[in-house]
Length: 470
Image 1 (cartoon, one colour):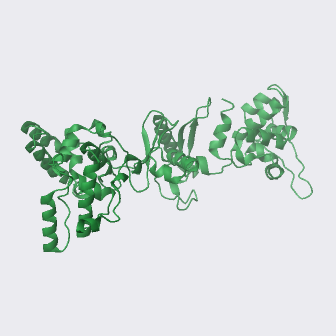
Image 2 (cartoon, one colour):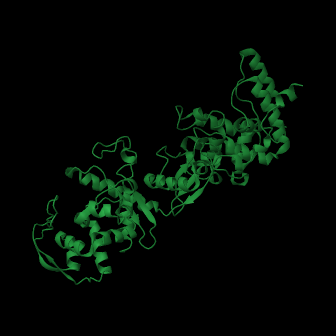
Image 3 (cartoon, rainbow, N blue to C red):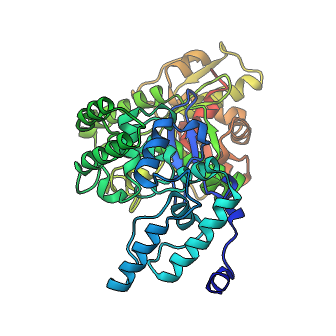
């Protein structure tokens, strides 16, 4: 009677499938280097049982449920101990659960330590054992088990602790992962007891040897290796952060947040991480070298001019830096992406757009233009506009090629006046600069200073425009 009473309103074991497991979205560079794992609550990558090393399977069974292939999903002795402890202490103690019970607890029930939950776990474990094969249960277990923090599933655990896929784990590494699920935070090499994993690993090895999964020699040899295991350093778990978040935003716009954070997308991008590392290094060096000029930040983007692919993107001197008062970006600091989010005056880098417009209008590289003192009347309510050259000199008649090549200001302003501000804005807009829409408001707002960098552009859009020249 009790069995049927607690069977009411239980979740169905049919919910246990790969499609119902939230999975992280992975962003890779063009060469397969993982840049970023996107997830909501659980960092998980579902893998099949044939992708999990045999020794990891054996180590897990040995330490968690030695009778896994014999039992019906539950352990009579385990339940007797649990209920005895409940009577003596008034609560259900953890531990002693079979692999099937742990799967049920991690996927279908809460982890509360009560007798009612334990009874429900017992009922569901029997149902799961009847519905699924042992291989299916083991596969589901390896993808549902927490291995510390937000790391769920053995593939994510292998990547977190060793920087490799589960299929590439050796015996010592497999032993470490097999020992984690009992108390992930305690046995973690990153926790407060960084050597506890060694004793736990020895315990796993002893169980494996007792169950004839390994020889005594393998047990002793592997024990010697445990203290020398190299773990992945707990650094920032993201590479090319500005670019990765840029891609994440694009994905969310296209697929929605739920799909991106739980749908297990595999995204290969155009970024070249080796080039990205070099670009990050250069930006830091250049900002440091320019400190005397009160330069506090820098950014860089590298595009393939043939197709516009982003090869590197550095949005600030240091993504992980706190807010810098020099940059006046409160609460964002280095996470503010200058390349995609900032509006900056382009300076003389906008001049080629005006010259390109002139070529479209029939001017040639040898067309002469005078570099002489010039006064552009400002109208009734405005001051006259008198452009000056950087060197303070006048160079007389110049061919357009030399005026542009030397980045001389007065010829550039004269040329803009001749070809028209709106025409130049149209060229810039067509080249990808969205802030230069050819509207009357923009014509009046920018005026002739446009060609000297008087307008604001997004650096990524300016770089995109330059691919037309390359």
